[in-house]
Image (tube, rainbow, N blue to C red; front, side, top):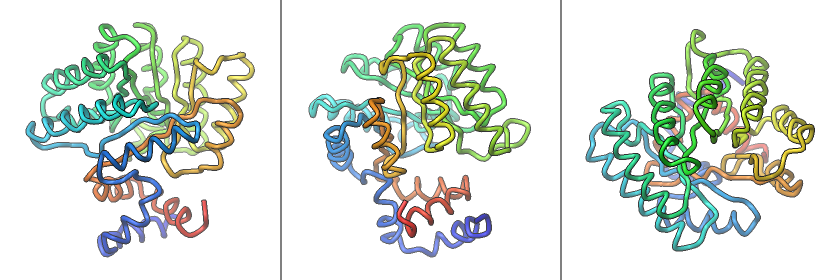
Length: 301
């Protein structure tokens, strides 16, 4: 499927935008906040909770950061107004992390204060390696003051992740999302073997549970889901100690099975005017997703 992946990515600019919109519809709630709220209502009615991600990243000015802040504030207000079971996920580069990390941190803390007022929760998404240490440092600073109203993402394919788990959990009660990782990284920074990434994921999940961290188990991989369920069963864990997390529109039969088995399942719901940029960037950053996308469209995931 490798050649097909790269062919799809190369020809993507030739695909009319309305067709990309139609193909991406199952995976993105829509362009507006109203679309996102409608999607989360449906998910809540089906027994799932959600996390809302306003699309956008790598801003080039702090005027854009002001827009990011306002967009997320409106999202928090809408969650509260509609009594939704949803929190928010934030990409620090959407708030200027690579422009001025201090100013980014100050703006995110301002948003976190509003998050706490609404009795909600903010997840700091993890991006590529230039952002990793800065994001973890920001998480630890926020956690010291705002406790369990904030969490962070760690990526199993990074070689540093097990060390990061130890460092973060040694400094306080922790709340993680653990995912494989999507950004293209060098072999210096990341494992490349399919099974070694899986193995590091299981090692990381076990280390998080050993430190009594709350973990969002974010994966669509049957091997990892089954491994996580086995660990949960062996430890006799309660359903308020973890949750499974999946992307909107992906492997819905699996998410339904997890829900029906009594697990808490949170769906990652992206939305916003940058839906086209989000779709194309994800494919360009990781061409392997193109094949998955292709199969999902034509072979009834």
